[in-house]
Length: 257
Image 1 (cartoon, rainbow, N blue to C red):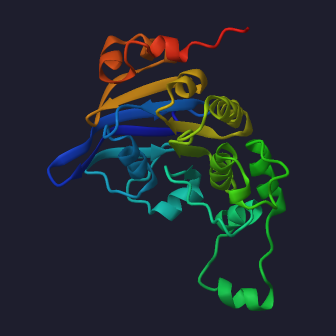
Image 2 (image 1 turned 90 degrees about the vertical axis):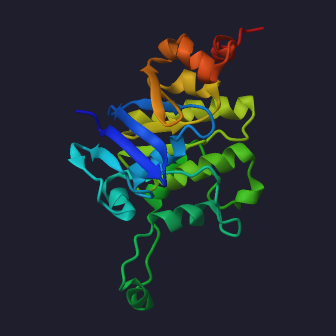
């Protein structure tokens, strides 16, 4: 049974089907890629999975249970976490405090309780998330003091603080250079061993083809192909719609000097 399973999911805005009858399994302990041209419906699909937009038809199952009508915060509590295309870090807070904001689970009575017994950080969870992304020693620094690549990884670490079963990453490599992207890929490949399944959206094809176990391709809201990186790289329909003729060259490892 897949950890996450989409069955014939559609998302409609007005008369436009942004996601059109998409089925997608995400197996536990894997890195699954979701690619496609701009406007293909990738982010809308993540929004549907996490409850930020309603689905028009179909069903979404997490751990075998339907979550279609579950609120976004309840999906987080069940083990779903995500990042967004924009970093949205708090620049006036340290890396530690950025993660602490995500770790806090306030209740209606929390402000009253804090007067008597202020909540304390959860250092083990924060340190675990930072270590998972190779960010040890960055907890006291401001985001503005870090490289763009490290800031991107802080955003992912913030989504990991809750120790989710599944993390959905929306363009985590945006703006990264080749070295930063390669380092990010190394960190992402380690997450399944830590109990974190990954659904990855990115336009960096070298990253996607090198770290993903399976890949699905969307075009105009529809799934046009699914398979291993090798199968996707050599799929004529995918090459025509998205990858381009030089996809195999882009994904090939660099030769040593």
